[in-house]
Length: 360
Image 1 (cartoon, helix red, strand yellow):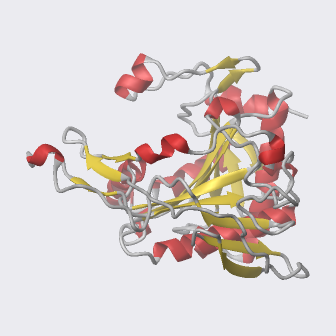
Image 2 (cartoon, rainbow, N blue to C red; image 1 turned 180 degrees about the vertical axis):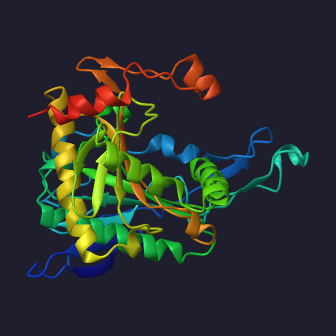
C-alpha cells in the first residue's frame, strides 16, 4: 500500500491510500478556506457518569448537496472539492466540522461553577474516510482488493490516532442511507478519536472482566464458539471470521463479524485475516442489500479496545445494524428503548439470520 500525506488549503491533513501502480498524489488545494474553528466541549452526566459532547458549530455543516457539487468526489475543473486529486482510491482527511478536535477549547471546569457537572474541551479528532472516488457506488460493490485497502487505512489511522495525546478510544464506522441520517451520499465513513472510553465499551469491559473471573475465558470467545457450533444464527463464515446475528439482537437487522483469533484492534490483524475479512464482509453486505431488494440503510462500526487500558479484556469485532424492519417500515426508538434502554425486537435472531441466509 502507498501512503501519501498532504495538506488542504486550511491546514487540515489529508492522507491517500493507494494500491501499487497508482499515480503520485501531488495536487494542491486551491480553495480559499477560512481556518477551522472547533468549539466542542464534553460534559459528564452526574446521574450516569457518561460524557456527552456539545458541538454547536456543526449546525452549519454541508447538508445534502447535489451530486455535481459533492465535496467527496474528486476535484473537477471549476468544481474543487475536499479531495484535490482528479481521482483517488481510498482517502482520509480531517473533518471540517468535527465533533472533537485537537485544539478544541471549552469553558470548564464545571457547569455554572457548581462543581456538579464537569466540563472539558472536546479534544480528539474526527476524520472522513472515502472508500472510492465513484459517487454512485457502495461498499458492497467494492472489490476484495479495495476492501483490503480500506482495512489497511482503518488500521493505519487507528495506530496514528492512538498516539495522539488525550485520545482514549478510536471508532471507525460507516453510516449509510438517509434513514440513518446520512447527508452526503458518496460512499464514505468516519473515524472518531474520543477523549474518553465510550459507555458501550465500558459496559462490555465490565462484563468481560466478570466472565473471565468466573470462567477463566473471554466471553466473546465463548459466544463465537457457541455460534459456530450451532450455526443457527451464522450468516457467513471464512477461515478467519464468522458473521452471525447476535443471540440477543436488538435491531431488526443486526450482524456481528468476529475474528477467530482475539486481537485488540485493527492494527493487530494479519494480512491473511484482512483478506478473509474482505470476502466475508462483502458477502454479508450483498445479503443485506438483497433482503428487501433495495440498498439497506445501516450503521457498521468497529468495536476496538481502549488505547491505554483493559486491552486484554477486548475482542475486536465489527457490528452492522439497520433500522429498517420491512421494505417500507422503520424501527423507531420509542419509550422503552429511548427512555430506559430496554430493547424490544419485532423479530427473533433466528428469523433474522434465516432471512439473510435465504437471500439470493
